[in-house]
Image (cartoon, rainbow, N blue to C red):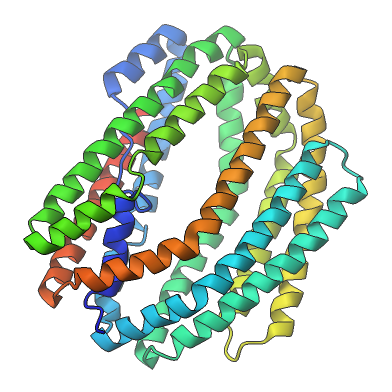
Length: 418
């Protein structure tokens, strides 16, 4: 059976399910400014606005460099046969890959629990990180075999295009890493200049409290607009299929996550003085954190490159995964030290709230990963029925590109406000 428009169909289905959210978070300028003026002195507000203005051009440049998947889709120009075969590769490999990823997630959860014990030299950290390395290696090998099958379907020109995009991404990432120490010092300088009192920190937290409601409203609005626009592209039969799929996709899960986050923050009830101490804890560890971030990124990119290497070298992949696990273990010791320091700032009740939330998050991620295989197979059946025409594919690509551009514009507006 031909699966017309299958790749774009995946994007549509993800958007309808809420997995791909062309959403922007917009903070009302007037309300934010009211809070700032009420909490800060004129000198503090001036320093904050000056900092924002100084970094506005940089933010605009970074947004302009963000990848647009719709543009890449056009450039790849996959044939209908290629789309069919790529989806077959997905169907044949999703069970094994998702199973291996779920194992790695469980090992990561075990490592997180060891970190929360707050004992930097605990042997549990090494045991957990070693197991994580093995499980990451298993998942990486499974992914490499699937990607090798997918690569065999692409033309040399398509492969060259993807490799060029990867190189561009890596170049931007390296620029960000190189810029990170200076950017951190600029933020530390702003923090020092503002010299916020605990009372001011509490007052400014009301800006953060605005965000869940704004995000929820924007999420609903943007998803509704996307579905309305999509309805002008689909025929009546296809629209019924989309409505049925959407009804089964738990459309309220985004709102539930926002509500859970709000309840967590209310239960945690951090005071302004605690927030100041926690920020200062991070500032005091910034050099170690920066170095850890760079090592993790480098090891992660090396593993990715080994997974994408031709031919697939299982031994090299596992060696790279072990190296990543070694770095994760080292970072875990640093994290355990910071947990021990944070526990001196937090009450026992507050730490228990954080530990409970982390455990619940681990469970939620495990459930999500455990459902992936079934959801993918259900998605394939849905897309087989949807059967987009080439003309519909083009219209959907145009719609997605437009929504991504709108998201970037709104994202910039958010940063201008905050």
